[in-house]
Image (cartoon, helix red, strand yellow):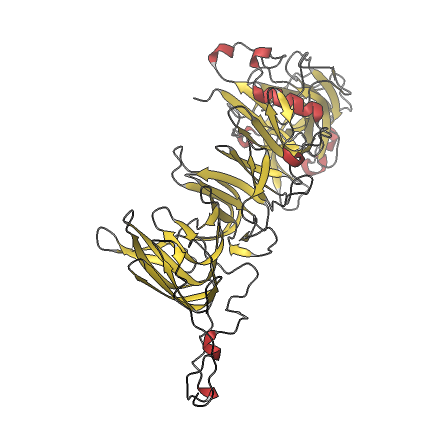
Length: 604
C-alpha cells in the first residue's frame, strides 16, 4: 500500500508554467491534475463575439457587455492552480480596432483573491487599446487553501471609469486570464502588490524532493502552514540537508533516488560544499560522500540490486577522473568502490531497469564496448542488456534501433518491459551470427536467437584480417610444384559462427552447445572465439585453459573429446590450425600436435 507521495522538482523553471482560463467557458477543459475544470461566472447580459486576432486568418471568441455608469455587471474567471507558488497574473484585452468599439471602451477594476490568509488585490487597467494587449494585474503568492480551490479573478466597470462611452454606455470586453509560475519558494517574498514574508510560517527549506504522508492519522494536518516534525521523513531530512549544502540551486536537479535498507542514494546534477558531485548517500541522518567524490557528469537513473547500485547518465569517469566509467557504472555499497560494466557504452544512458538478474540499459548510444580503451564494440542501437550474475553484455532479444529515453517493467511482477523514446526499428526476432532451430509440442519450427552477443573484436574489420600466414599457404606436399599449394581458405565475414557441435556432460547429463567461428564474445575470463553456450541459462563461457587465437572453422565432438580445426594457435601447444580438447578434463591435450608449416623441394 502506498503510504507517501513523492514530489520531484528541479529547483528552477525552464519555461512559463501555470494555468489560464478563457472567458468563453467552452474552452476551459479539465487538466490531468485538477479535480475540475476552470470556470467562468457572469452577471449581466454578456454576449459572445467572434473577432479577428493579430495572427492573420485567425479569429477568437470573446465576451462583451454594454453597461451604464455605476453598473455592477461583472465576469469572474475561477482558475484551478495545482501548486502554491509565486505567480505573475495577466489579463488579455482584445484590441478595439478589430471590434470597432474604441469609442465605447473605458477602464475596469480587476480583483484577484490569492488564497490562504492573503487579502484580495485590485488593479485598474484601461481597455482603451487598439491592438490585443496583455496586462500584468498581479505579482505575488498564490496559496490554494484546499485541493479543489479555484482562484477567482473578477473584472467589472471601474469605480471611476474613463471617457464618456458611446450613447451613454460603456462596453466591457473579456478574453482570458493567464497565470505564470515564477517560483515555488514561499519562504519570504515581496512585490508591488503584496508583502508576504515567510508565508508558510517557521520551518526548514529543502531541495529537489518532498515526501507527503498519505495515511489517515495525518488527515487533519494543514499543509499550508508549517508541518509538524512527525511528518518529516528520511527523504525530507535529506532534501533539507541538500539545500543547505548545495553550491548553487540555479542549475541543480534531482533526477533519481534509490533506497537501500540503511542508505538513501540521491543523484542528478549538483555539486555540494563537501565536493560531492552528482550523486550522494544519506545515511545515519547525514549526507555522505561516495568514493572518488561521485561522478564527473549528470546522473539520470539508479537501480539497486542487492549490494550493488547501478548508475546511468552522462558521466565518463568518477569526479576525480581516476576511474573511466563510460556512461554506466556499478557501485559496491559495502566496499565503497566504483567499477565499469565491461567497457561501458558509447553514448549517454537515460534509463535503467532490473528484471530477473538482467539490467536493461536505454539511451542515446550505438555500441556496448568490450573495454574501457576501445572506441567500438557490440552493436546496441539505443538498448542493451547486462547479465548481472555473469557480468557480460547479452542479447536482449529482438532487433531494436532508436534513441531510448525510458525502460521499465510492464507489470508489477516484472513480466515484460516498456521501452519509450525515438524508436526507429523494432523486430520480434534478432540474432548475432547464429540461431537455434527446434520444434515445439505441435511439431512447428521455432527459431530461438542466442541469449548472448557475438561480434568482432572491437576495432577490427568485418572480414578476416589475420596477419599471420596461414598454414595452408606454406604447406606443400612432396613432389608438387610451388604453384600447386593447397587452396587458400576463403575470407570469413564477422561476426560469424562457422561451426557448432553438441556435447552432453556425463557428470550432470546437461546438453550444451559448443560454438566456434570468427567472432569475439566478452566473458569474465576474456574475449573468446571458441565457447560453450548453455541454452537453459542463456550464458556463455570460454573453455578452461588458454584461449584460441584466430578463426575456428570446424568442430567435432567424439565422446568427451573436442576436435578443433581452422586458422588459429593455442598458447602452449605446438603447431597451428588443429587441436584437441578434453571436455571432461577441461584441458587441451598437448600430446596431440597441431599442423606444422613445411616446404619440400625435389624428392627429399
